[in-house]
Amino acid sequence: MKIIDAIAAQTPTIAAIRRDIHAHPELCFEEMRTADIVAAKLTEWGIPIHRGMGKTGVVGIIQGKTNTSGKAIGLRADMDALPMQEFNTFAHASKHAGKMHACGHDGHTAMLLGAAQHLAATRNFDGTVYTIFQPAEEGGGGAREMIQDGLFQQFPVEAVFGMHNWPGGKVGTFAVSGGPVMASSNEFKITIKGKGSHAALPHESIDPVPVAAAMVTAFQTIVSRNKKPIDPGVISVTMIHAGSATNVIPDSCELQGTVRTFTLEVLDMIERRMREVASNIAAAYGATCDFEFDRNYPPTINSEHEANFCRSVMESMVGADNVVPQEPTMGAEDFSYMLLKKPGAYVFIANGEGDHRAIGHGAGPCMLHNPSYDFNDELIPLGASYWVQLTEKWLKA
Image 1: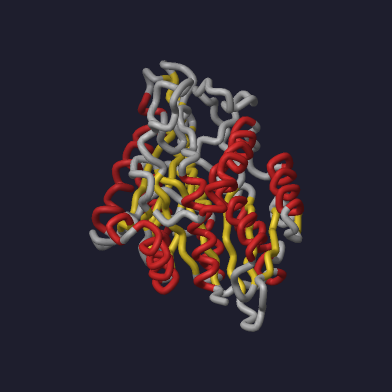
Image 2: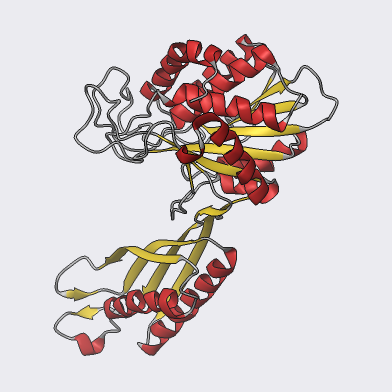
């Protein structure tokens, strides 16, 4: 692996920052302490900063030795944690009950900090790199908020790049592909309104429970019969709430869940058909329904040119055999908002199998959103070196 020696030498210091952030997790739009750390380090390294975009976002501005081209790129890392209890008991485990860095955003921040330190020290490129430390990826849409606050107007870039750790792969491997790599994430809530009655007098009711059961079954035919089989789409009814007593037929029943797709066209179709199916099934039973559909994160779609460029950088670092196609996942990512505005690519860096958790880890696997997860600090020099080499090749001096 071609890791930059100066970055490798700084890895213990950057890893200590990562572990400090891990021990003090902050939820979306609450990342004040984390943002303070990021801002202080960037300032210490002579990097001008801008704060406040997306409430707690931090942007570092690193100029190259020259700027004859006027080109600029953005490198993005997320900073927020998850609202879940950590099972790990090692020294840097969360000190805040119910909050945990279970997705590795502490590591993403650390890798970009390591890259920023080296880029500021060497400035071996022509143009400008903006290091974007983003809040609120976990459901808050921090990328969208930074864009709405003028991110790309104030810091115009040709392309923007993101990276996420991925457990299970061997450390030293990357994954990248053009096209859709993560799905859209959307939520629905359907309230079925019937007529309550005594359970012994069902003929006097309009029972919303069988209406709900019919809807759940019918929704799956949208996936299997209304779209091409090669176009991915998932409808998951994850909550059904009705009733408060065993001998009472309730007045209403509520369904909630998610819809995930890789294209907006399939999403449009699923939302339209779900609305039609819900309304007509309710009517067939003599009930009515309220249908709410909230579009959260759009699909994450990599630009082909930028994805290929990332691949070439990765292959120069770890060899072609260690750069694999990025298998699309139905998970969602708000970097998608940035890719709607600018060309770019979102890539994966393998986090290992969890063997780096020498002591004090929980009983579960080292998987994302698992209470026994921990970011692998072995990735810091590799990820930071990738950011630097991507920058230097994109903004070739």
